[in-house]
Length: 402
Image (cartoon, rainbow, N blue to C red; front, side, top):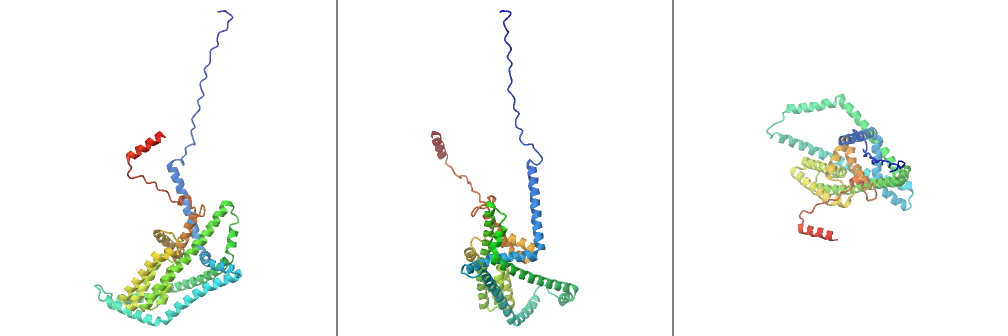
C-alpha cells in the first residue's frame, strides 16, 4: 500500500428518528366519568331554574297569560269556521264577529238553561235535601257511636262565629276581587280571540320573520302542529262530552232525578278534565240521586255513568279524537296532578292539551313525519332463541367457498 493512498473514511450510522407518540388531549378533572356527570348535573340544575323562573313569571302574569292561552285554544277550535266563511266571500271582520256571536250565544244559552232549571227546582230540591238530612240523622242514631247534641251545637256555633268574624269579611273581599279579575280576564280573552280569528295567520308570519331556511320550516311546522292539536283536542273533547252529557242527562230524566239538566251540563264541562272529570261528575250525580230519590236510584245512576264512560273510552275517543291525544294514562294523571298543583282549576284544564302540544312538537321536530332523534323508536334486535348448529355450519361453509 502506498503512503499516498487514502484510508477509507469510517461510515457514520444514523439512527432513525424516534417519533414521540401522540399523548392525545390533556386529561382534566372534567374529562372522566365523574366530571361528565357533574357537567350534566349543572346543566340539569340550569334547566330546572329556567323552568321554575318561567312558571313563576306565568303565575305573576296570569291575568294576561291565561286569557292568551285560552284565546289560542278557542281560536284553534273555531278558526276553521271563520276561514270557511271567508272563503265563501264573507268579509274578515264580519266572519269573525259571527263566530264570536255564535260562541257567546251557545254559552249564554247553556248558562240560562242551567240557571232556569235551578230556580224552578230549588224549592223541591231544598225540601228533599232537608228530608235527606233528617234521614241521615235518624240513620246515625243506629250506629255504634253517636254524635251528641252538644257536638252538633258546637259545630253550629263555630260556623256562626266564622260568618260573623273578620276572616269571613276578608274572604268575601277576596271573592269580590276574584270575580273582578275573572270579568277582566274574560273581556281580555274575547278581545284577543277576535284578533286571533281575524289576523291569526298574519300575526304568526310576523313572528316568523327572524327565522331563515330550516329554522323557518321548523317554526312553521311547530305552529301548524300546535293549532292542529289544540283544535282537534277541543273539538274531539266537546263531541265526547256532548255524548256523555246527553246519555247521562237522559238517564237522570228517566229516573226523575232533580236538576237533571244542570247535572248534564256539569258532566259536559267536567269531561274536559280527562279521567278525573268523569268520575267527579258521576259522584255528584249519584249524591243528588241518593239525597232526593234514595239508594236504589243512586246505584242505577252509578251504573248509567259507568256504562257511558265505557262507551266513551272504548269507542268515542278513538274514533272522534284520533291521534291528537296520543298520551298514556299514566302521563295524563301525572300531568293533571302537576297542573293542579301549579295552576289550580285552570292548571287542571290546560295541563293535558299543553302536554299534547309539546309532544306534537317533538313528533315534527326534524320533519313532517320525523320526530326528534331521541324520541324515535329503537329497532329491537332479538336473538334467535333456538338456532340449528348444522344450519349455521353449512352457512359458514357456503361463505368460505364463495
